[in-house]
Image 1 (cartoon, rainbow, N blue to C red):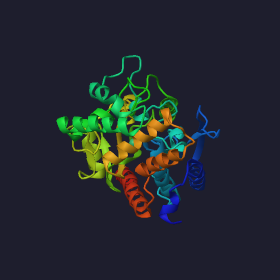
Image 2: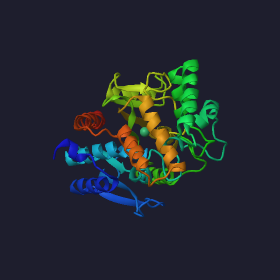
Image 3: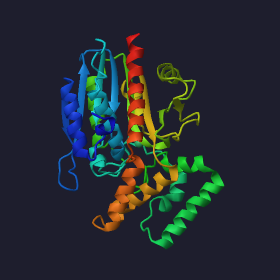
Length: 361
Ligand SMILES: [Zn+2]
């Protein structure tokens, strides 16, 4: 099979291909039905494949579709790893847990967010406490997620964003928009006000598969930030944190970037899956990274997200315009380019093989 063929055209092909690949590898498979149907009335699932000995003390977790639409690339990498037999000769003390389409609604509906309009990678906060505030997002909220995309409102929204950028710089704008916010349920990067279904599922999978492991590595697959086709391993830890050093020893100093130190394509975030694994597994040595692949320039991705968010909340889903908006969103996270797919597959394979090699020593 050629590399590009691992990469699916839609959610149901992705699920089928993943399950076929996992089955061929002799994985133990579990499927979890999501609480929400697709808009076409189809059932949606998160599928989990477990390979290796159940009581292995080292566990590698590979996640796709945390951000829905980003699951196209993540699913392709996961299927490719399985089809290419990367896990064929696991050490007896290593197991691999592959979580396919953690946010299946976003994947099937080609949205970055879930059935609650929640950004799953901002949802892992303590919801009993009041959510962290994001004053800068509040100032820009109506421009980030406008109720109308008419020429007049767009002009004023884009002007507001441009003024903010000129006054505060690009990286502060990125931080304001993407850090995570808990006050605008129809906005972008909304962290929600309760633990969403995918959050609860991840917690129960962690409980089942990982609590007795001494070492856990997590690779959460993402797209949409960084140079076209280039992979970066993103960590929330500062560079002097032992966990950062551990990641560097596995993957090399060039590839691992800290959001705290400011060298990453990502801003520092709140309520992330990476931090959740650390909190959920206090007695394990956890090394959790986001593997992020670049697609389009930041503002192009941002504008694709804005338009799709407007369509979802305020637009006419059946209009001709809607197809264009959905297609633009899809391509902002999943380029229709075989060379891009080959490049992300190769880098994804290398990241995974380095963990397995580090644990074989
Ligand atoms: Zn993402």
